[in-house]
Image (cartoon, rainbow, N blue to C red; front, top):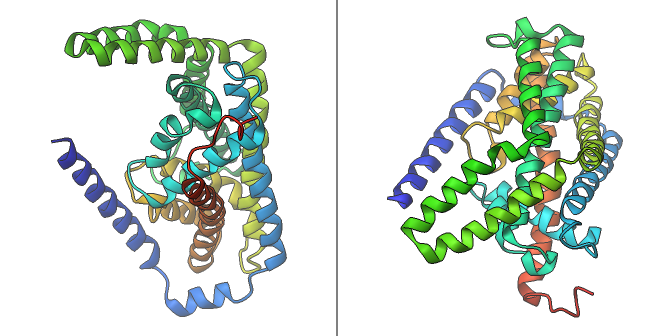
Length: 330
């Protein structure tokens, strides 16, 4: 039954991606795309790549700090490979396979348990979602583009969403009873598996409680700001690389809209969904259809290729070497 559900989810994702991809490309011709691509500024793209690497370096450091309480000797380079490898897997495989890989495949290398890693993934996602909601609110407030987008997005709605996310990050203990209930229910079904899962849940809840501390969370927020500043500059510098774009600053609206679109069902790499909403954001700020479409494809490529190549190389070398020994981790 679970296999059938996975196939159905994949088919739904492909259908959604195909629909949004068609909506993007039906408005432009090949000649328009070719002309818009003809004058791409490669120097701007080089700077965008540098900002991408700096932004992801901040993300890796943020994750290392989350894991540091359970392994104080953990180094940035120990986390870099699993982090980039998980993004590479998400970019080429369905069902967010990279997240599963990061949660369970690198425990020996990281020196922590799966429960701890899952807890950090949860906090990482919430921090990123909080940053995106804040960026969208600021972009809409500064640009006044809310009415130009489908349905409009209220600033107060975004503020409420940001407040809820912040409360979850600062008070995760409120969810402990629910997790404990789930562990007890699983123990009734399978005592052996339930006991193991309960142990991991306790470690995860303990990790969440530690990360929610004011000093710790403030540091994680700072690294989140640095990470998303780097990603925002990737969007902006890709816009600067296209001289035909009338309003390069629209990239700061495209960033949160395109990122939120990745929450929709779709294919690996978010083909179609990401591009459609980036195009909508660029058009809402006064850019042409062809130029907005080329921009969406360009920034998508810049966000997809580097982690796929870097993470893919890590996974390939790791599979050839096998699991690292205790001597390798010193």
